[in-house]
Amino acid sequence: MKTTLEAPAREVWKTIRDFGRVGEYVTTITETTTKGSGIGALRTLTLRNDIQVVERLESLDDQKKTLSYSVLETPLAMKGYVATMKLEDLGEGQCELTWESTFQAEPTEEARIKKVIERLYSLGFEGLKKLHE
Image (cartoon, rainbow, N blue to C red; front, side):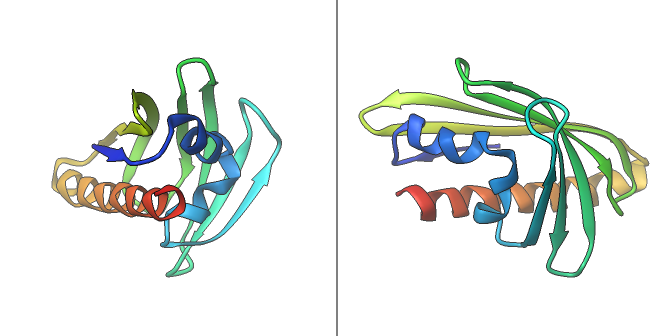
């Protein structure tokens, strides 16, 4: 999924690159705790319905403005989830954020899980726009 933000890429990147700040822009997250820093850091997200998700920072590239993370623990019936957030400077105070992921799930669950993930990304886009536009 992609969105365009009416904000400079360098400002939006400061928020995204801070692995522990995801709860500031994804409104369904009520609490975020982080263990460690840099590649390998873990964050535990508590969602509104008291569900917890544990994620690990897999890569962070300030030059390319990309961040990848994996999900280690989730109640969703999926495995191998890896997401990448990539920010591109469009000039004139605009940037484009691409947020994509791959995962494996049972065919009967895949469409439902994809919908949940897309909803989370949409909330993230909305939250980043509120913070930066």
